[in-house]
Amino acid sequence: MKPFLNKNSVTNLIAVAIILTGYLFQQELIKSVGFFALSGAITNWLAIYMLFEEVPFLYGSGVIPNRFEEFKFSIKQLMMQQFFTLNNIEQFIETEEQQAGKVLNLTLLLKAIDYDKIYESLVSSIMASSFGGLLVMMGGEEALAPLKAPVTEKIKITVAEMVESNHFKSALQHSLDAHKISEDIIGKIETVIDKRLNELTPQLVKEMVQAIIREHLGWLVVWGGVFGGLLGALFVYF
Image (cartoon, rainbow, N blue to C red; front, side):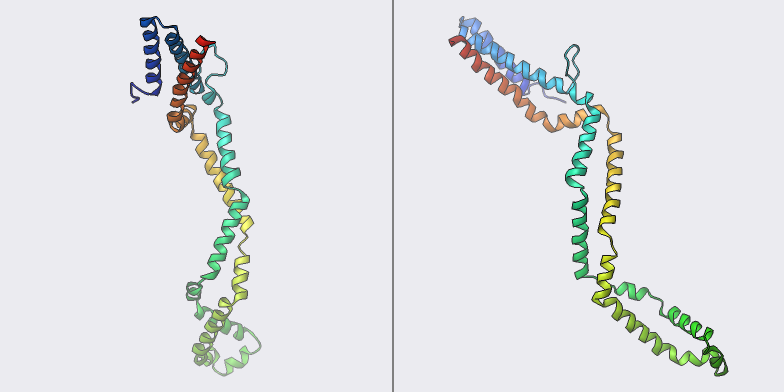
């Protein structure tokens, strides 16, 4: 709920009081100051009012609700061209990748590997090769059973050395295409912004703008009254 006495009403009341004082004491200077102050305050108030509301027969009034689509487009342009640019997002992703490279820990990846399955695949390949017949004569796959533990351990060591190598880590980081990821992110951000802007109504945009600048617009009325009063004083003397 708006307070009854705000900057606008106080300024207008002071201007009216000055006018009445001028009539009471029959002072042209005081009357002129009051009328000019009231004129400046009312003019500025009307200009502010016309930003948000359409006034009949006054061309250009209601500019914010009438230019609703342009406001939405400007908001989107501001977000996409100043904040979520392709270059900004690429730099962010590359910085994150560089920081991740310093603390990259692939222990969980190594633990997730099924080394038994690797060993079984290796044995299957051997049995399917020209050595398979010879192994069958020696007892088949069971003849290789004593080798399972040392072979599996050797595979673990070899894979760990490969994964921890600088060459592997570098290849892993380069496989993450920052440019492609950035384009995908921008596309998703733009979709979210479009969706939210499509939910806006002219009334909601008007209320948003009013909430942001209402406090400062009130001072325009005050200064309109002050400078109007000064011009009134100059008018009497000159």
